[in-house]
Structures are given as C-alpha cells and as structure tokens.
Image 1 (cartoon, helix red, strand yellow):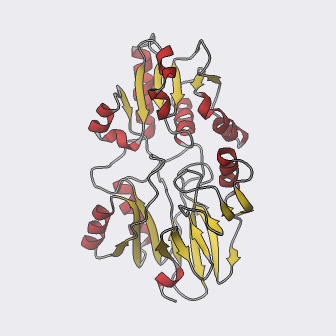
Image 2 (cartoon, helix red, strand yellow):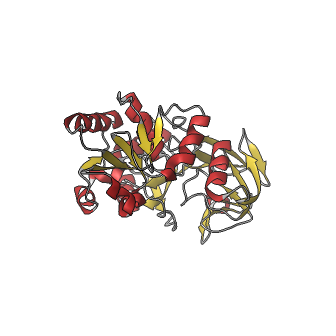
Image 3 (cartoon, helix red, strand yellow):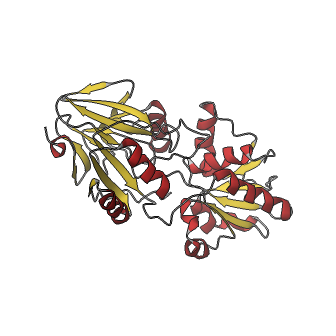
Length: 330
C-alpha cells in the first residue's frame, strides 16, 4: 500500500482511507483522532473522537460534555478497520500526543501534531517514535529560531520583579498549556508567592492541579484588589478594560514569537519572554536526523525553509499545505 493510500490531505484534514478516520480535522467528521486540545486541532461536533484521556477532558472543559457523539481513550495499540494506531507523548501540552498509523502492509506514518523537545513541567516529555514517514510541524521552521532555556527567561522575569517591586507584572500567555507552563516555570525559578490568574484561566489551571501538577498558590486577578505582583492572563485580556485596574504595569508576553522584536513592539510588550511549546530550528532538524525517516511530510508553518534543508541533506520531503491550523497561535 502506497503512503498516499494510507494518509493524505483533504479539505477536512488528514484522512486515512483504510481506517476511515481523520487526524485533527478542521471540520466535523464521522471519526476523528485528536493529537491535543488546542482549538486549531481539537474541534467539537465529530461523530466519534479518539484521544488521550487528558485531551478528552480538556475538550469537555472547552466545548461541553456533549462535544462529540462518542469518545474513546487512546490506550495501547488500537485496531481501526484496516490499520492500527497508537498514541505517544509529544511534549507540547498536557495530554498532547503523536499518532502512529500502522497499516498491515505499507509504511508506518507518525503524525507529530505540535511537539516540543524542551523540558516541560506540565506534561510528559516528547518520545521519539521510529517510522518510515514523519509528519512534522514547521511553526518555527527557519534557522533564525533558536529558543533560549525557558528557565533563563524566567530569571529575566524574576529580575524585573525585583527591580520594579512596585509595578505589577502582567504576562500574556495562551489559556491552555502556555499559562500553566509559565506558572510552573515561575515556581521552578523561585517565584514562590501568590500568582494571580485571569478568570479565563481558572478552570484549566484547576484541571492541571487535579492532574497532579503543582502550580503553587493562585489567586483571582479579576477581584477589585489583586494581591500579587505576578499576573497571568490570556492575550485577549490586554485589549479589555480589565487591564486598566493595574497601575503602571510591566507588560510581558510568553511566546516563541517574542524572538521577533517587531512582534514584541507591535504588541507594546516591555518584557518579551521567548518561551515556546514548539520545536525550534535545531530541535526540528535534530528530530529528523534522529528518526531518519524515508520521507518527511511538512505542515503548518514555514514549510519552505525546512523543505530546503531536507533537500540539502538529501532527504525526501513534501509539503502537505494543510489549512486551518492557525486559529490558536503559540
């Protein structure tokens, strides 16, 4: 069986004909396999969803208990019609997984979804999965992207808090994954006092704590008086009246895109924190070399840079040109 008979792009997303399922479909389908809970990969309305237990819980939190007709927890090797599948940690957010698609005859394909190889205190680390074809993201697929040690960025935050003790530090972080990682990293960096969180983060932070992740003391950032110097909020909150309750705040933002100074300036960010939940250029190229697949399929990101690198390396690669994976930026 050829590779494109096992998995190929459609308008709804990556489709597997022998298993009759889609992976991270962008529109409702009868059967969906979901890599993780971010909104550009996990959508409501599918007939059936197969994902890790944590991803299923996250989807229920975000979309309601009836987000799908039926759900199945991914455990071990699962047979779906003419193929077998298995889920493996991606290191991206809590519950994130790579999906290995294994036909009875033909190449083994691993769809990595979004993945990260830097230490992440809120989820299981990335697990290399040997395969014939590796489907990789290219969010930061250019040589300019080389992310620093996340704890060094937290040291910058701690230093700023010490230098400006009278100023609240408002850090923008996406509600699922990034916010909880920033809080956990702050604890690792020795920021022990209460951290205030915007109301939009409360339920997801509570879920992480229920999963055994220690986030330390958290207080609401939507009260009239906020008794914390460090405040974490989703980016959308910075465009609302909520931010006006803080006097002379230090505005920060945690994202891999903060390596691009123009983006930081556009957002009015005084303290850009380069903290990414995706592989940077050295990590994505290291991963491809380690796995050494026969083919590399590249999706959502700067595909051209990684395609050129594969060409120079003498590796077979192709772009998938999937659309719809830009809704919840990193």
